[in-house]
Image 1 (cartoon, rainbow, N blue to C red):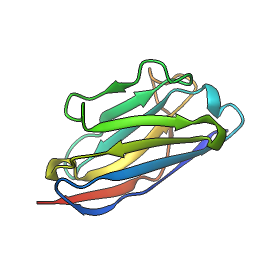
Image 2: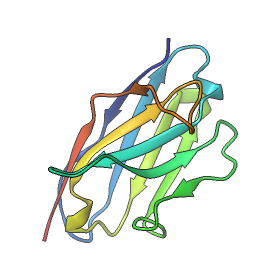
Image 3: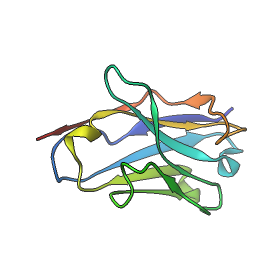
Image 4: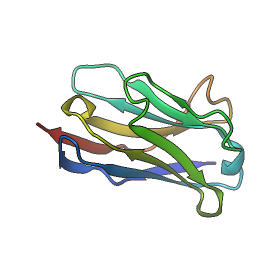
Length: 119
């Protein structure tokens, strides 16, 4: 069974950068589509970015295009989310999601990492 653990969140100022990491375990991880999602207080969880196992066709939410970059290191079984030019509206808990049927459905989630951007 694949498991994922997020890290890298923190408190930053608007305009700063952060890099989130999602470390995965499980021998089939390398073939899974990986996604980053976020959930702000009182809001639904929303898709942020996703990447296929062969790094083809990364996708982004319109709100983060040009600022965030998703990548994966197969050797380290880790997916990253580089976040630049952070805005206060990026404040949320960020989650890594995956699953055998991703990106259609995600059924494996980490515990999340908090990102807070002050103005």
